Image (tube, rainbow, N blue to C red; front, side, top):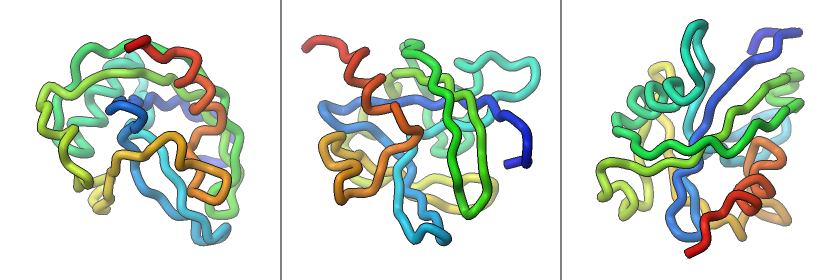
Length: 148
């Protein structure tokens, strides 16, 4: 995060029933675990849907299909004691490799640092459970849910 700069990121909420795939993070200052869907910074000259495809390929080496734009969330937050400001382009999509939906943990890499992505039950975020970021994502997912 660069101080005093607004960052544009794109994330994808891969749905699996009432669960979504999310990175497990930890803020050492707040001493708080949290979840955030996969994705990252939109590079100059890149569309946000292209950023999702690139980031997911880089992070977990998976192919993405059927991306659907859900909305934008403005996210102002504190992480590791530093203030951040993001415009978050949120997408829904599916994995080409359907076996990923069966894995409890998917190992990933972000800038040479390993991480775990897990299927997070949307009813088990916040209220005593680790929060799902960005703030407002749960409401956006509920508002854009595709009827079964």
